[in-house]
Amino acid sequence: MAGVFAFAFLAVISSKESSAAASMLEATRSIGAPVGFVSACHRYSWLCSASSGREMSDAEALPLLKRINGHVNATVTSADDMSVYGKQDFWSLPTGGRGDCEDYALQKKKDLIDAGFRSDRLAMTVVLDRNGRNHAVLLARLKGGDYVLDNLTGGVRSWESTGYTFLARQSFENQRVWKVILAGPRAHQFQGS
Image 1 (cartoon, one colour):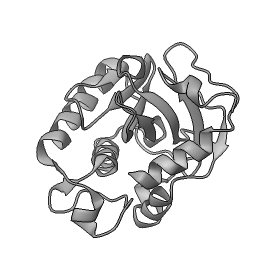
Image 2 (cartoon, rainbow, N blue to C red):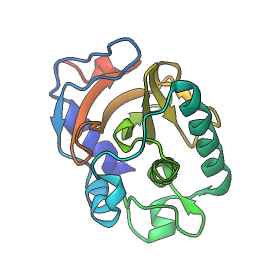
Image 3 (cartoon, rainbow, N blue to C red):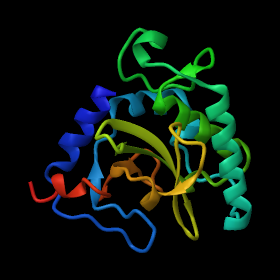
């Protein structure tokens, strides 16, 4: 995760503002994608493909998000990239039932797309957790706001209720592009620098 943090810190240090309209995490500008993401995008066509899936109501989507989040959290064991792949910052689907936070998020994105959830409503996202550590989650955009699927909690929560600082995410409009999103308790540390 050190590589992701370095990417996120360098990417947001020069950003001047943060915005969040209602409960949606809005982007301020485009940035380069994490190296691990770029490699994964080449291996998994569904990760960066054009929109697929169908429109769902929040009443239909939220139970699906909860089911997929719970299932992946229960079936994958947390393990760092070095112990699983022998290298740092390797974004992959879980291997042998093991993976780190990006791997959990990738599996959730794939499973949701396979279940018919619109791919352009899902975004890989880099955050700082409550302890200030670099972390990756999956962000799902519903009509009622942006929700976080996280391997550190069994629940699917609105981004505001996570206590996380949101740094950057995959663009909903173009899945190959990443955007700066500064929001949450520590966002002020990255603004105006």
